Image (cartoon, rainbow, N blue to C red; front, side, top):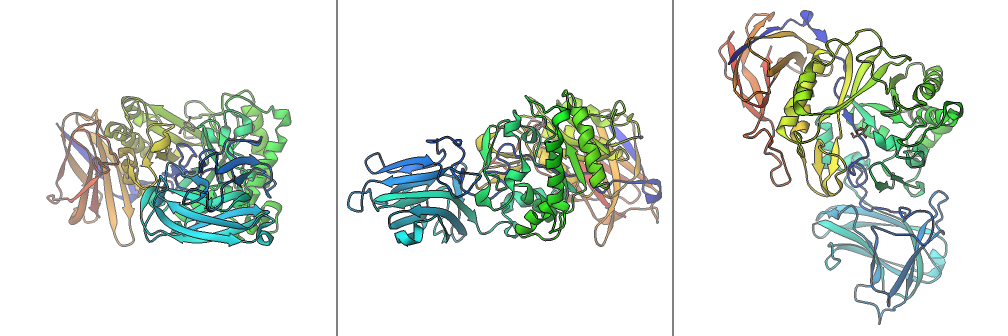
Length: 619
Ligand code: AHR
């Protein structure tokens, strides 16, 4: 079949796309942060994950040695007020009787630590003992037999009779993607250990973000970052919800918490401060989602909501307040004098149907607008088909559905009222059998949906795919955009689709129309500029089984011809629509670029079956 795309390339006939249109949603799900973007290698670094009653489970820590050589138990002797659990080791054997290599404990990190030859790792821990100590801190292979780096601490009782922080820089002599950290001794006696951290020195700007994952995210060029959830913000129960105050201050003093929706413990190294730092590093506007007194299973009634409102106001002050304000001073004490820019907050996540949502919402809304009139507030209630019954700057819209349904939602916002708050499509994705663990089919439907959002960007001002990350060792949600383990990563086709839209935010949407039999085609055209050159970018999804010849007719150019040289085509397709990427074939379904050959004034391009193509034409 042959279809025509009629384009008016004059910017005057176009419409500016909001600067914020495409961004990312970072949720602590699938170990996106703990065991993911946050580069800390030790899991359960303060021994708190087993709960506050002792003795407690120290998982994933394990013992090096046996019952005849060592006895390990937790107690509540930590020097840190908010995380009282510490580890006590009673070493029974002595240098003549201990197994070679000593006895102690090891931490395997998050399914193995990625230790790389020549790289440096900063290990810190707290220790106390009423005996002299002789402790080896080592990075070893997964079974402990091969030492990749090691340092010995020898200290007399007088040095460690009170809790003492020790730090060491270890340089790896070898590589192991599933290494572990060991603390061992051959000296008889008792010692206590707490708050053990092992951080690669090489993180993004030294800010603690794992470089390869950071870069994948940055390449999307997100204009905003919504964080830290999702259901993670709500909790199954309020007692397990993300409480920002528990995640700030020195890392050793953070209690950590069990995220009961995604069912794992986080030490909260990636806390409220680090999210703002991440947003700034990546050049994205932070959008903080806070708990509004509602979890999946319990709610705070509106009459009692004020403490939660105060907590939200304090969280805003932490980001925006000057260094002398109560919470701004906590930020300053973490090394950041100047405020972070915070212009958007969301009151809760997916809570619109809850009993107290509207009542609570209004109390939050009024208090925030009074203190910070410029902050834009996002409601959980969908205003796309009928007007909201409460004030808001934006409303959340979430959609997880089949491929055909999302493809047809290309038109979703065509009929939405242009009055009132703007739409924030803060979570979208194809899920279910069409998606597999990240299929081309899902990505094509998402591309069509995004083209529809681009066309409706007078009312839709922000959109983000969900979820962003998955550590394959604990896949809590499927599919996800960026797939990783301790050392490797790849993008699903859905990830690559987002890269096609990296230039859309802040560009100009040109007027365009498809003519001919085009029921399985959608297309949009933008005009954008890099530092030196003006481009027209045509994006087209062919959702059908047949290839289509697309004839592009462009008017409104000055002079009225397109320049050929330097124009390029980028195509995302594969032999089978259910094809996916994987650790073994990370580039099976990735965009392919080629130079575009065309006759001036007559551009006809072939859109392969099941494909997403973009054409960058020099203006
Ligand atoms: O993106 C995964 C989950 O989907 C989010 O936590 C929640 O908001 C939605 O239900």
